Length: 84
Image 1 (tube, rainbow, N blue to C red):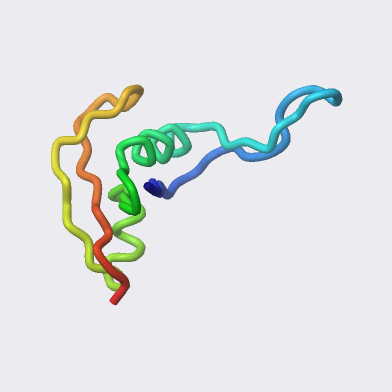
Image 2: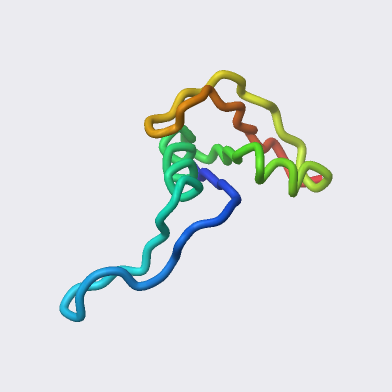
């Protein structure tokens, strides 16, 4: 599945000259990874901030009360059904 979260993150090459990776660091990166882990098969799950940006372009069903490691409160994520 696919998980998408929108927000600010620090992105770039991290590591040493011998071994570096391009990565994203921050709460939004954690939320995106957690949402991705919850998505099954071809499912596309998006965060509330992403939903606010695309709600006029997609049909999505809310999934209330999801709990993710590293996120203090329960979260509603949206299961994208189709593009309008």
